[in-house]
Length: 71
Image (cartoon, rainbow, N blue to C red):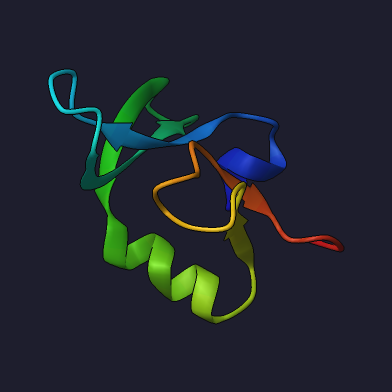
C-alpha cells in the first residue's frame, strides 16, 4: 500500500518465456530501496478488502495493481 501511495508501480510478475503470471507481484520497498517479489495471496487479501484492484478485468488482462478510487 505504501508503495502505491508513494506513486511506485506494483506489477504482476510474468515469466519471460511463457508471459504468464508467476504468482508473485513486484513491489518497490522504499525503506530498503529495492524491488521485492511478494506472493499473490498478500495482494489477493488486499483486493478482497477493497484496498487495491487489478488494472484490467482479469489477472490475464492485467499488468499492474492500482489503488482503488478514494484510497
